[in-house]
Length: 220
Image (tube, rainbow, N blue to C red; front, side):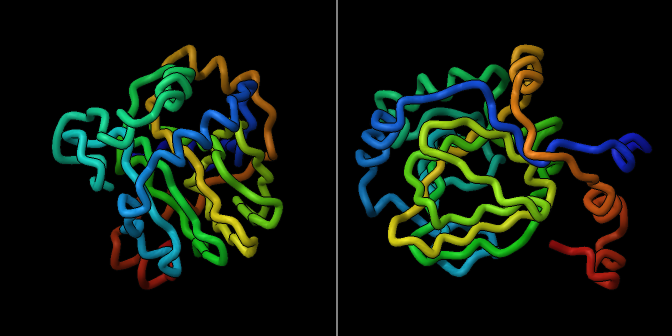
């Protein structure tokens, strides 16, 4: 259950982490993925152009999008990658889901927030852009977060966020869910913040019975 501190403590909306990866090597791993391996993201908050390939998933299943159902293991997609394992290991802590997430050119991810506490206790989500373009509009809590290929970002997806890709090129991120340890916490402490916000609405929504959430329009 949320504490009083959860309701009143300002949180970083996004952090640019003090790490830089080889964009060309990331792209080379991405291009090893067969087109047939991409499948629609199961979340309802998109227009059909948001797709995924699981790299680290329950039972090592490449098509698995949940975080439940068995021990995590590398999928055949991760085994094709030469560089991505090195990138993943740069982030200390126990790994949960790891995916390539693609928003096709012209695609939209509608505004929503992610219930991270329902996935794993204390989990955080890290984005490493692999392919992007200047037209991508990734907005978190009203702030546009501009990410370049090879950078590393923590994004607090408990804040409402949306993505539009009006450009002519697909946008693909390596997305790593991890339960932090002290080393990752120290890495976050050296990061550059994109500003702070309050998660009062998030914690209120997830403290109330679902019928009240629907009644008062607090759903995603």
